[in-house]
Image (tube, rainbow, N blue to C red):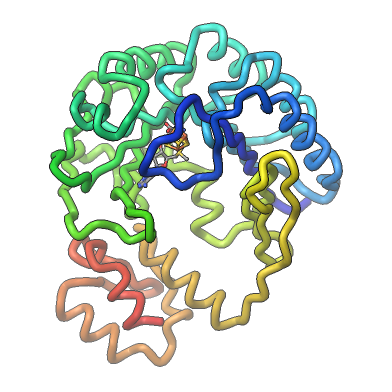
Length: 325
Ligand SMILES: C[S@@+](CC[C@H](N)C(=O)[O-])C[C@H]1O[C@@H](n2cnc3c(N)ncnc32)[C@H](O)[C@@H]1O
Ligand code: SF4
Protein backbone atom coordinates (compact mmCIF):
# COMPACT_ATOMS: atom_id res chain seq x y z
CA UNK A 1 0.00 0.00 0.00
CA UNK A 2 1.35 3.43 -0.97
CA UNK A 3 0.87 6.40 1.38
CA UNK A 4 -1.53 9.08 0.12
CA UNK A 5 -2.94 12.35 1.45
CA UNK A 6 -6.35 13.68 0.44
CA UNK A 7 -7.37 17.33 0.12
CA UNK A 8 -11.05 18.27 -0.26
CA UNK A 9 -11.98 21.83 -1.23
CA UNK A 10 -15.22 23.44 -0.01
CA UNK A 11 -15.49 26.65 -2.06
CA UNK A 12 -18.19 28.51 -0.13
CA UNK A 13 -17.95 31.47 2.26
CA UNK A 14 -20.50 33.66 4.00
CA UNK A 15 -18.65 36.70 2.70
CA UNK A 16 -15.58 37.03 0.49
CA UNK A 17 -12.56 38.66 2.15
CA UNK A 18 -10.89 41.23 -0.10
CA UNK A 19 -7.36 39.89 0.48
CA UNK A 20 -8.10 36.23 -0.29
CA UNK A 21 -7.77 34.58 -3.68
CA UNK A 22 -8.64 31.00 -2.76
CA UNK A 23 -11.44 29.56 -4.92
CA UNK A 24 -14.76 30.36 -3.21
CA UNK A 25 -18.12 32.04 -3.71
CA UNK A 26 -21.02 33.16 -1.51
CA UNK A 27 -23.75 31.21 -3.36
CA UNK A 28 -24.35 28.82 -0.49
CA UNK A 29 -27.59 27.61 -2.11
CA UNK A 30 -25.27 25.65 -4.43
CA UNK A 31 -23.66 23.61 -1.64
CA UNK A 32 -25.89 20.54 -2.08
CA UNK A 33 -25.33 20.41 -5.84
CA UNK A 34 -21.58 20.89 -5.29
CA UNK A 35 -21.42 18.04 -2.78
CA UNK A 36 -23.12 15.73 -5.26
CA UNK A 37 -20.55 16.61 -7.93
CA UNK A 38 -17.68 16.35 -5.43
CA UNK A 39 -18.80 12.94 -4.12
CA UNK A 40 -19.01 11.61 -7.68
CA UNK A 41 -15.43 12.76 -8.26
CA UNK A 42 -14.20 11.11 -5.03
CA UNK A 43 -16.07 7.86 -5.72
CA UNK A 44 -14.54 7.63 -9.20
CA UNK A 45 -11.03 7.51 -7.69
CA UNK A 46 -9.54 4.08 -7.02
CA UNK A 47 -8.07 4.11 -3.50
CA UNK A 48 -7.36 0.37 -3.42
CA UNK A 49 -3.56 0.71 -3.79
CA UNK A 50 -3.29 3.40 -1.14
CA UNK A 51 -3.21 3.88 2.60
CA UNK A 52 -4.76 7.30 3.22
CA UNK A 53 -2.58 8.88 5.91
CA UNK A 54 -4.12 12.36 6.11
CA UNK A 55 -7.29 14.14 5.00
CA UNK A 56 -7.64 17.93 4.91
CA UNK A 57 -11.05 19.53 4.40
CA UNK A 58 -10.18 23.10 3.42
CA UNK A 59 -11.81 26.09 1.85
CA UNK A 60 -13.46 28.38 1.52
CA UNK A 61 -15.29 27.69 4.73
CA UNK A 62 -15.91 24.00 5.46
CA UNK A 63 -17.56 24.94 8.79
CA UNK A 64 -20.45 26.39 6.74
CA UNK A 65 -21.56 22.82 5.97
CA UNK A 66 -24.34 21.45 8.16
CA UNK A 67 -23.62 18.17 10.02
CA UNK A 68 -25.86 16.39 7.46
CA UNK A 69 -23.94 17.82 4.51
CA UNK A 70 -20.62 16.88 6.08
CA UNK A 71 -21.87 13.39 6.82
CA UNK A 72 -22.72 12.96 3.15
CA UNK A 73 -19.18 13.98 2.24
CA UNK A 74 -17.58 11.61 4.77
CA UNK A 75 -19.62 8.70 3.40
CA UNK A 76 -17.64 9.02 0.14
CA UNK A 77 -14.24 9.58 1.73
CA UNK A 78 -11.85 6.66 2.29
CA UNK A 79 -10.79 5.46 5.75
CA UNK A 80 -7.90 7.52 7.08
CA UNK A 81 -5.29 6.11 9.43
CA UNK A 82 -3.94 9.47 10.65
CA UNK A 83 -4.66 13.18 10.79
CA UNK A 84 -8.08 14.47 9.65
CA UNK A 85 -8.20 18.28 9.64
CA UNK A 86 -11.15 20.59 9.01
CA UNK A 87 -10.87 24.36 8.53
CA UNK A 88 -13.37 26.43 10.49
CA UNK A 89 -14.20 30.13 10.64
CA UNK A 90 -14.77 31.44 14.18
CA UNK A 91 -18.30 32.67 13.49
CA UNK A 92 -19.62 29.39 12.07
CA UNK A 93 -18.31 26.93 14.67
CA UNK A 94 -20.97 25.53 17.05
CA UNK A 95 -21.30 22.75 19.66
CA UNK A 96 -23.46 20.72 17.26
CA UNK A 97 -20.88 20.97 14.50
CA UNK A 98 -17.99 20.05 16.83
CA UNK A 99 -19.93 16.97 17.94
CA UNK A 100 -20.53 16.00 14.31
CA UNK A 101 -16.84 16.49 13.46
CA UNK A 102 -15.86 14.17 16.31
CA UNK A 103 -18.39 11.57 15.25
CA UNK A 104 -17.15 11.66 11.66
CA UNK A 105 -13.49 11.21 12.60
CA UNK A 106 -12.12 14.76 12.38
CA UNK A 107 -9.23 14.93 14.86
CA UNK A 108 -7.74 18.36 14.15
CA UNK A 109 -9.41 21.77 13.77
CA UNK A 110 -7.76 24.71 12.05
CA UNK A 111 -9.44 28.00 12.95
CA UNK A 112 -9.09 31.10 10.77
CA UNK A 113 -8.54 33.69 13.50
CA UNK A 114 -6.33 36.01 11.36
CA UNK A 115 -5.72 38.55 14.16
CA UNK A 116 -6.17 39.23 17.87
CA UNK A 117 -6.68 42.95 17.22
CA UNK A 118 -10.24 44.27 16.72
CA UNK A 119 -9.28 47.04 14.26
CA UNK A 120 -7.29 44.62 12.12
CA UNK A 121 -10.20 42.17 11.98
CA UNK A 122 -12.57 45.00 11.03
CA UNK A 123 -10.26 46.31 8.32
CA UNK A 124 -9.71 42.83 6.92
CA UNK A 125 -13.52 42.66 6.62
CA UNK A 126 -13.82 39.61 8.87
CA UNK A 127 -17.23 38.59 10.18
CA UNK A 128 -15.92 37.82 13.68
CA UNK A 129 -14.40 39.96 16.44
CA UNK A 130 -11.70 39.06 18.97
CA UNK A 131 -14.22 37.75 21.51
CA UNK A 132 -15.77 35.41 18.94
CA UNK A 133 -12.29 34.18 18.00
CA UNK A 134 -11.51 33.43 21.66
CA UNK A 135 -14.88 31.70 22.11
CA UNK A 136 -14.28 29.57 19.01
CA UNK A 137 -10.83 28.50 20.26
CA UNK A 138 -12.30 27.55 23.67
CA UNK A 139 -15.08 25.60 21.97
CA UNK A 140 -12.63 23.79 19.68
CA UNK A 141 -10.40 23.00 22.68
CA UNK A 142 -13.38 21.49 24.53
CA UNK A 143 -13.79 18.89 21.76
CA UNK A 144 -10.35 18.55 20.18
CA UNK A 145 -6.91 18.02 21.59
CA UNK A 146 -5.26 19.19 18.36
CA UNK A 147 -6.27 22.76 17.53
CA UNK A 148 -4.43 25.07 15.14
CA UNK A 149 -5.04 28.74 14.34
CA UNK A 150 -4.25 30.83 11.27
CA UNK A 151 -2.97 34.39 11.67
CA UNK A 152 -1.86 37.02 9.14
CA UNK A 153 1.03 39.45 9.70
CA UNK A 154 2.68 42.28 7.75
CA UNK A 155 -0.67 44.03 7.27
CA UNK A 156 -0.04 47.71 6.45
CA UNK A 157 -0.82 50.03 9.41
CA UNK A 158 -1.66 47.11 11.72
CA UNK A 159 0.96 45.71 14.07
CA UNK A 160 0.99 41.94 14.63
CA UNK A 161 -0.52 40.99 17.99
CA UNK A 162 0.88 37.85 19.66
CA UNK A 163 -1.86 35.41 20.75
CA UNK A 164 -2.75 35.80 24.43
CA UNK A 165 -1.27 33.28 26.91
CA UNK A 166 -4.66 31.57 27.44
CA UNK A 167 -4.78 30.83 23.69
CA UNK A 168 -1.19 29.59 23.53
CA UNK A 169 -2.07 27.13 26.30
CA UNK A 170 -5.05 25.70 24.39
CA UNK A 171 -3.62 25.37 20.89
CA UNK A 172 -0.94 23.06 19.49
CA UNK A 173 -0.11 24.75 16.19
CA UNK A 174 -0.04 28.21 14.58
CA UNK A 175 0.27 29.20 10.95
CA UNK A 176 1.35 32.83 10.52
CA UNK A 177 1.21 34.01 6.92
CA UNK A 178 2.56 37.26 5.51
CA UNK A 179 -0.23 39.15 3.79
CA UNK A 180 0.14 38.67 0.05
CA UNK A 181 -1.06 41.27 -2.44
CA UNK A 182 -3.03 40.57 -5.62
CA UNK A 183 0.14 39.82 -7.57
CA UNK A 184 1.14 37.20 -4.94
CA UNK A 185 4.02 39.35 -3.69
CA UNK A 186 4.64 39.39 0.00
CA UNK A 187 4.80 42.98 1.32
CA UNK A 188 8.21 44.44 2.15
CA UNK A 189 7.75 44.43 5.90
CA UNK A 190 8.58 41.32 7.89
CA UNK A 191 7.24 41.71 11.40
CA UNK A 192 8.97 39.62 14.04
CA UNK A 193 6.88 36.96 15.75
CA UNK A 194 7.57 36.29 19.41
CA UNK A 195 6.14 32.97 20.42
CA UNK A 196 7.21 30.94 23.45
CA UNK A 197 10.00 28.45 22.61
CA UNK A 198 7.68 25.45 22.96
CA UNK A 199 6.31 26.51 19.55
CA UNK A 200 9.02 25.36 17.18
CA UNK A 201 9.23 27.15 13.82
CA UNK A 202 9.35 23.99 11.71
CA UNK A 203 8.44 25.76 8.47
CA UNK A 204 8.84 29.42 7.59
CA UNK A 205 5.15 30.20 8.35
CA UNK A 206 4.34 27.36 10.75
CA UNK A 207 4.96 26.78 14.46
CA UNK A 208 4.08 23.69 16.48
CA UNK A 209 4.38 22.25 19.97
CA UNK A 210 6.43 18.99 19.99
CA UNK A 211 4.64 16.24 18.08
CA UNK A 212 2.01 18.54 16.56
CA UNK A 213 3.47 19.52 13.19
CA UNK A 214 0.83 19.38 10.46
CA UNK A 215 1.27 15.89 8.99
CA UNK A 216 -0.80 16.87 5.95
CA UNK A 217 1.16 20.01 5.10
CA UNK A 218 4.46 18.15 5.63
CA UNK A 219 3.39 15.86 2.78
CA UNK A 220 3.13 18.94 0.50
CA UNK A 221 6.47 20.28 1.70
CA UNK A 222 8.42 17.04 1.40
CA UNK A 223 7.22 16.00 -2.06
CA UNK A 224 4.78 13.29 -0.87
CA UNK A 225 1.79 12.21 -2.96
CA UNK A 226 -1.65 13.78 -2.55
CA UNK A 227 -4.89 13.91 -4.45
CA UNK A 228 -7.08 17.02 -4.38
CA UNK A 229 -10.83 16.86 -4.90
CA UNK A 230 -13.10 19.82 -5.62
CA UNK A 231 -12.90 23.10 -7.52
CA UNK A 232 -9.36 24.43 -7.89
CA UNK A 233 -7.83 21.51 -5.94
CA UNK A 234 -4.24 20.51 -6.74
CA UNK A 235 -2.71 17.02 -6.85
CA UNK A 236 0.69 15.37 -7.05
CA UNK A 237 0.34 11.76 -8.05
CA UNK A 238 2.68 9.32 -9.84
CA UNK A 239 5.18 12.17 -10.09
CA UNK A 240 2.69 14.31 -12.05
CA UNK A 241 1.12 17.59 -10.94
CA UNK A 242 -2.39 18.47 -12.05
CA UNK A 243 -5.28 20.56 -10.79
CA UNK A 244 -9.01 21.02 -11.19
CA UNK A 245 -10.42 24.14 -12.84
CA UNK A 246 -12.18 26.75 -10.68
CA UNK A 247 -15.68 26.49 -12.13
CA UNK A 248 -17.56 25.51 -8.98
CA UNK A 249 -20.39 23.38 -10.36
CA UNK A 250 -18.63 22.21 -13.47
CA UNK A 251 -14.94 21.91 -12.64
CA UNK A 252 -12.77 19.55 -14.67
CA UNK A 253 -9.34 18.03 -14.24
CA UNK A 254 -6.90 20.17 -16.21
CA UNK A 255 -3.95 18.90 -18.25
CA UNK A 256 -1.00 17.42 -16.40
CA UNK A 257 1.84 19.92 -15.94
CA UNK A 258 4.99 18.42 -17.40
CA UNK A 259 7.92 18.62 -14.96
CA UNK A 260 11.53 18.14 -15.87
CA UNK A 261 14.05 16.71 -13.38
CA UNK A 262 15.41 20.27 -13.07
CA UNK A 263 11.91 21.64 -12.18
CA UNK A 264 11.59 18.99 -9.47
CA UNK A 265 15.04 19.75 -8.05
CA UNK A 266 14.32 23.53 -7.99
CA UNK A 267 11.04 22.90 -6.18
CA UNK A 268 12.65 20.57 -3.64
CA UNK A 269 15.30 23.21 -2.89
CA UNK A 270 12.67 25.90 -2.27
CA UNK A 271 10.54 23.63 -0.07
CA UNK A 272 13.62 22.45 1.85
CA UNK A 273 14.79 26.01 2.51
CA UNK A 274 11.41 26.75 4.11
CA UNK A 275 11.69 23.75 6.44
CA UNK A 276 13.73 23.49 9.66
CA UNK A 277 15.09 20.18 8.35
CA UNK A 278 16.65 21.97 5.35
CA UNK A 279 17.77 20.90 1.87
CA UNK A 280 19.64 17.63 1.31
CA UNK A 281 23.24 18.33 0.24
CA UNK A 282 22.76 15.74 -2.51
CA UNK A 283 20.51 18.29 -4.27
CA UNK A 284 23.23 20.93 -4.16
CA UNK A 285 26.17 19.29 -5.94
CA UNK A 286 28.28 21.92 -7.70
CA UNK A 287 27.07 24.67 -5.35
CA UNK A 288 29.98 24.45 -2.88
CA UNK A 289 31.14 28.05 -3.49
CA UNK A 290 27.63 29.46 -3.01
CA UNK A 291 27.18 27.43 0.18
CA UNK A 292 30.46 28.81 1.57
CA UNK A 293 29.47 32.38 0.67
CA UNK A 294 25.96 32.14 2.18
CA UNK A 295 27.34 30.47 5.32
CA UNK A 296 29.81 33.35 5.77
CA UNK A 297 26.89 35.80 5.53
CA UNK A 298 25.08 33.88 8.29
CA UNK A 299 22.14 33.06 6.02
CA UNK A 300 22.54 29.27 6.11
CA UNK A 301 24.23 26.62 8.22
CA UNK A 302 25.25 23.15 7.17
CA UNK A 303 25.11 19.75 8.83
CA UNK A 304 26.81 16.65 7.44
CA UNK A 305 23.75 16.02 5.23
CA UNK A 306 21.74 19.24 4.91
CA UNK A 307 21.80 22.99 4.32
CA UNK A 308 19.45 24.85 6.67
CA UNK A 309 18.31 28.47 6.44
CA UNK A 310 19.07 30.50 9.58
CA UNK A 311 16.54 33.00 11.05
CA UNK A 312 18.26 35.69 8.93
CA UNK A 313 18.12 33.43 5.88
CA UNK A 314 14.38 32.84 6.33
CA UNK A 315 13.88 36.60 5.74
CA UNK A 316 15.46 36.34 2.26
CA UNK A 317 14.35 32.92 1.07
CA UNK A 318 13.94 33.91 -2.59
CA UNK A 319 17.50 35.23 -2.78
CA UNK A 320 18.84 32.06 -1.11
CA UNK A 321 16.95 29.94 -3.57
CA UNK A 322 18.23 31.91 -6.58
CA UNK A 323 21.81 31.34 -5.41
CA UNK A 324 21.39 27.64 -4.70
CA UNK A 325 19.18 26.48 -7.55
C1 LIG B 1 -8.21 29.63 2.42
S1 LIG B 1 -8.23 30.28 3.97
C2 LIG B 1 -9.49 29.31 4.68
C3 LIG B 1 -9.75 29.63 6.13
C4 LIG B 1 -11.08 30.20 6.51
N1 LIG B 1 -11.99 30.35 5.46
C5 LIG B 1 -10.91 31.57 7.16
O1 LIG B 1 -10.95 32.56 6.43
O2 LIG B 1 -10.79 31.61 8.36
C6 LIG B 1 -6.77 29.66 4.74
C7 LIG B 1 -5.89 30.73 5.31
O3 LIG B 1 -5.21 31.41 4.29
C8 LIG B 1 -4.75 32.65 4.81
N2 LIG B 1 -4.86 33.66 3.76
C9 LIG B 1 -5.86 33.87 2.90
N3 LIG B 1 -5.57 34.90 2.08
C10 LIG B 1 -4.33 35.36 2.42
C11 LIG B 1 -3.48 36.40 1.97
N4 LIG B 1 -3.83 37.21 0.96
N5 LIG B 1 -2.28 36.56 2.55
C12 LIG B 1 -1.89 35.76 3.57
N6 LIG B 1 -2.66 34.76 4.06
C13 LIG B 1 -3.87 34.56 3.50
C14 LIG B 1 -5.61 32.97 6.01
O4 LIG B 1 -4.83 32.98 7.18
C15 LIG B 1 -6.61 31.82 6.05
O5 LIG B 1 -6.96 31.44 7.35
S1 SF4 C 1 -10.18 34.12 3.95
FE1 SF4 C 1 -11.56 32.42 4.36
S2 SF4 C 1 -13.58 33.37 4.64
FE2 SF4 C 1 -12.32 34.87 3.64
S3 SF4 C 1 -12.74 34.57 1.45
FE3 SF4 C 1 -10.89 33.38 1.95
S4 SF4 C 1 -11.66 31.38 2.38
FE4 SF4 C 1 -13.42 32.75 2.51
